[in-house]
Length: 203
Length: 204
Length: 192
Image 1 (cartoon, rainbow over the protein chains, first blue to last red):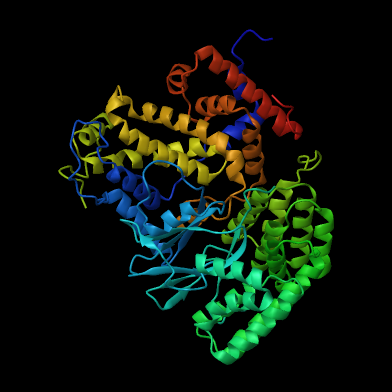
Image 2 (tube, each protein chain N blue to C red):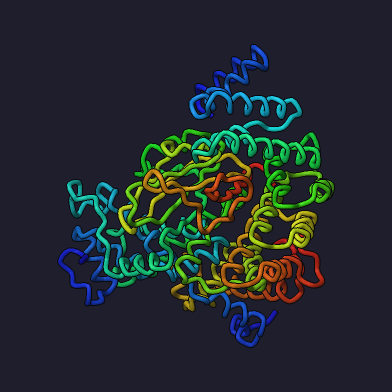
């Protein structure tokens, strides 16, 4: 057992030096989406600042700081209708989500993993999700626009397995998910995207 | 399934097959013209007769209806999918889950040989192949050669790779391709990482 | 758009921003979020091993930070205080991680491609590191990351984690040993 502080030995170890170098690589989060979600929660908190200030009558809008607006602008310059897709676990925490009826239904369905679909379309007036889990009905699953950034999203319980889906913008324009694998197979002229949901109960 | 569909289904179970078909009709009724619907229901009926999942067939018909495709095109699509589902079920075995058969059909459509599906089943007797088959389909759709993709995914599943790892693997390949790598090269790099020279990765 | 009453040109300190938020300008909290978001995302990512969990833990930490902001003892050290909350969130998230792994679907990384920020990740080496990190005990991983990636002094780490300095040194030492062994010998490290 060595007596001195072994952690200082690390700098002489080439492997760990490479590891640390790799781990130090800066990470950038999708700012507009992340910040919007945090501030949505923050602005919903009834008296989030411990009684020093009454906030019940505060307006529930989120004003974008110039830096965040700039980041959002850069995002859209790259892709006109990009999309973001990720899975959220079913939440059991306190306040109900502000995302509307979809998430209430989502929590009520036991067992199915909940998938959050996101679509970036700053100039759209409506975005709907269609797929083999909602009978491809453009009226069934509208997305909700976040308070900022033209980001639309919705949470849906999806059974494990492989699924096809797409988005319908403004009621008539069909769009696949540009960042998801394109589904092969007959698509009737409007390409679909593929979604794979792993079974939470299985290996 | 909606509640009304569920209760109709329960009723159908009590009454027998024809009522179950009527349950499917409810969704197709309002979206397809009578002639197309009749033909689609016939295909679905015979597919179910051989144990093929019917929901993807219903959904394919509804997809066509939503996209305003003509009846003939919808019919062709449903027929082709029914055949692929049947082939997938044959290749994967009758005990396969619906999800596996559906993912298997995607793989077949992407050009993977039925024999490859059977081989994957043999190498991973326990555990679902759904995600592995889905990842395989997606890789091929991205341009990875079928043989190569099959070899790598089979090796991963054979080595005990879990669903989450397979999905991460696929995401990694996609990202590399998006950054400009050729599909085969991207697969090669990822596969290299999955199988470092020498020591075994982990026990299944 | 400008935060109410505050010039966007002036870079405000953490203490000043905390004060502004506590005076009722909740929107100003967004500045703090923007300031710490990326750096702490990195820590959370390496702690939890995947972006989905990391973003959720980070989001959770920020929201909790806001809700208990009045209990932040030293607003000038908001950063460390928030990191302590985040480290705690990562601990509780870690327990759920094993079950949630199976729920993974796709593309938590894809928005990085869209945002053009994500550097090319063609390296299998990263996968090796990620795996090795995940095999460390949570205490060791946390200590390793804080010391060698976040470059913290042991005294500060003690405040963030609540553990004593000598315990932390031991954890870092063990973590280095195990990481070295896993990454050079390429075999599964024995159970702790």
